[in-house]
Length: 351
Image (cartoon, rainbow, N blue to C red; front, side, top):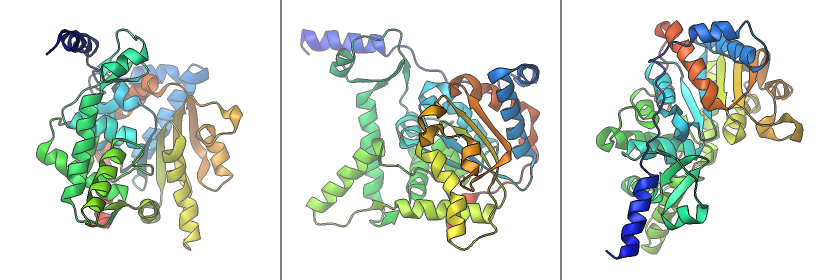
């Protein structure tokens, strides 16, 4: 190894020396804080009301709850939080970005880590060291490429046909059960608890690189290859909405996952289910600004005009989700309303 390589290895190890530690919602009881915030104003009271609505979802025996995730909160320290919601029957289905599912959770399920940036040098320096940056969080690009190639290996092992993202992510969960190195993985726990995960923009992630390689290699060899069927995603998620009846949404961020789950109501109507309920409960935590008219920042009241969400039990919380989700989730965990919830196992609808 030459001297420059040694210096680079030392510098990389220095920058990737402090792991992100994911918050444990069981280790503290947020109920007194949420109760106090309920007597305040501004975002504090919004969060308290949102937490109350989530607890109502948990207490409603007829309500299926969907966790909807966009953004990088998993990399930032909320990964175990989301896993605990699945482990304790606090959510029944998940709609998320490819980054959340693949680049963050599956990535750590393989034994890799996210790191705190103690300093943020020039991003060109980070590139030369194969370090990717998410604000003040680092990822080792070489480890991320291991994630890419693992997705490729899973694809190569499957029958070459069309899969919904849910079906492929289930295979990822099965892989982690057999080969994973982290117990508290959302993808792994969802597989074990039959909680379906949908990723409407699945290839916009490390999965995309692995699947493109799978397809190109198969084409070169003159062999068939698998594909991801986005239409099947929409159909399957709508099937769950029709079967579930009453539903509640706990949404972190916005973007495609938010619109995808809300659109199931409209899709069900198009399919002739005119009696399908709008989403009865809805909470959204976001920092998006409503003034630009973008879909990601559209309020839940706006969604009501499209016939997607009820305005009776909805709450917007304009806050950075990593700061408030631990309080909401800890409060709900310690109130314990999840203990008496029916176990739905919606993934078995497609067995």
